[in-house]
Image (cartoon, rainbow over all chains, first blue to last red; front, side, top):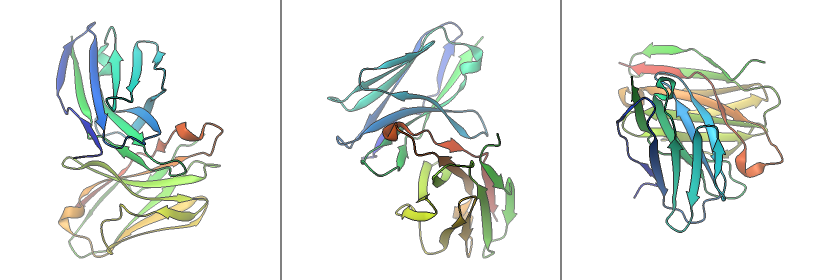
Length: 111
Length: 117
């Protein structure tokens, strides 16, 4: 089983809709969780960290479910500019800065 | 402020040749990471440094790969000899040491697209 797994998609969603992705992780001792965004042929950029209590940034909401070992990303009122690949990343060990990434979920917002 | 700088941006070489990728991290960042991204395997960490010292090289695929960080502002990833399966995008990233240790953001460079023929 992969350490971090994501549904690769693609998700094709009409503009204005709400879309959600999940990401599962295998190491129950994982410490920190992140969502990165990667545009085509560009580098990944941090979208948001995921806190235990869940957190929101504008139209984006991230949740952590430790019992079921997954994190989620919800995008409300999707915009054309949200089209990208969304990568989840997990930091497993205290004191080790290694991030393990999922393979990404590709999202296309349709006008 | 300049971000992470990588060179070259594109590299095409023939099997068996030596390839050297270069990275300049963001000034003041203590951590430097080398990643490889392919369609099949996604984004994989190869090695990371803290204060110029290699900390975790468990992702380095084999002896053909080596990485150095001679000072705080420069790192290289070398492949010798290169093989077609090394074709990928190689990203360098850096991050600071901050009070929020669990949530240090990694800042990625634009990547080097390597093609080995």
